Image 1 (tube, one colour):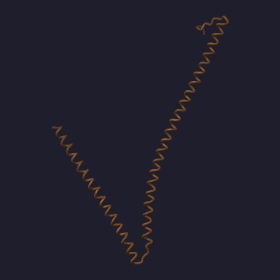
Image 2 (tube, helix red, strand yellow):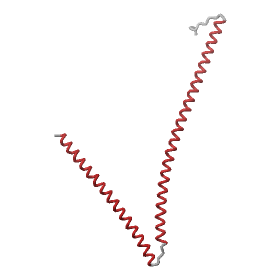
Image 3 (cartoon, helix red, strand yellow):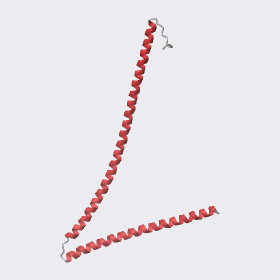
Image 4 (tube, helix red, strand yellow):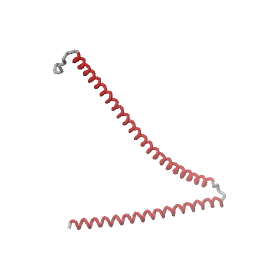
Length: 150
């Protein structure tokens, strides 16, 4: 009984989702149609205004000024999008360079660690060589060296 209720609930949810998706598609299509209609209407009005201005010998400068403002605005928006894309590209490239630099710094640190390790080993080897030389000289002079005595 419980599984049947869960199954029915899931089926209802799927039906609601499908219905919502269909409604969303219809709304998007309607919005597109309204936008197209508004754009056409504005274009027709713009043409009518210019023709009325011609008939009444009014100055077209105002209309042309508004049109050039809109044109300039579109150009600025286009340039802003282009600059935004370039900025994203350069940001990505800069991040790659920083990652490469971090890798280079890590490699240098490792080399420094190897050099430090080599210096420590060299120092230890010199100490061992001095001790061996001391032991060797002591046995050559006939002295016995007792390493148990400190």
